[in-house]
Length: 306
Image 1 (cartoon, one colour):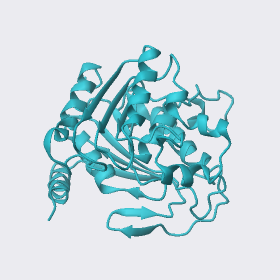
Image 2 (image 1 turned 90 degrees about the vertical axis):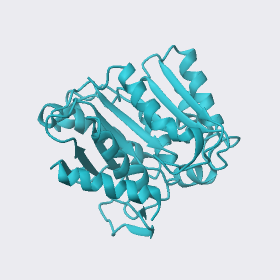
Image 3 (image 1 turned 180 degrees about the vertical axis):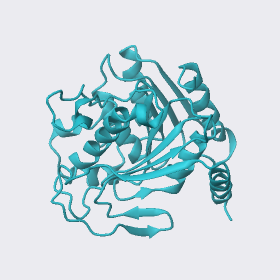
């Protein structure tokens, strides 16, 4: 059994042994935007990797009673916008957050091209924005602090998270749905070997193709490149990448780092010499294994663990 599977089994055992709570819910109570309402079952392409996700859901993992610190992180698994790695970059990470009092929330976002999705580029980001709004609107009920709701993403999930961190609004006070009345701005971003840019020189081509199609308009490419959309209101950011990543070039993180720095946004970046791509919490060797501790330390530094 691989180390990651052993870790997941251990965390799951600890999770249930300590009577922690997991809630599953549909993100949209009625028909989601950019959907025709027709969905078919998602497909397990390979163990724990699912495609054809046409209905968005949240899995909310709560820390054991008395341990929660009020912070929540919405986790976007990676998969090149073709599917989602639901364990390694989803539930395993949520359980890790639980171990130090953070509520981990896995977002099963709609995959472009899935049955029922009518606008491939807008469906995922609308799910991410809705997830932030929902958790913020229910913060008191969930025992969370409304100003300590972050978003995290791995690989293409990092693209979704960084898009949510650069395209947000304060909510619509006239909306009939109370969820839509609150802000969808994340309070911080945690981006792990993220796809950031849709520029052909550095993007992950599969993610770009699956999200934007073959010949996207240049303005659309710019809109979905987070490094081109940083403002003074972009949230503090933590970045992790490996120099030898052959799937998603490290330039994605580097470019975003400099864009954030230019705007005076608090940002910390860790570039490891080796690690490759898709290493999750523990599927690598050497110094890259340190990133979870660095991430936790950064959250402590910004008072997100109090």
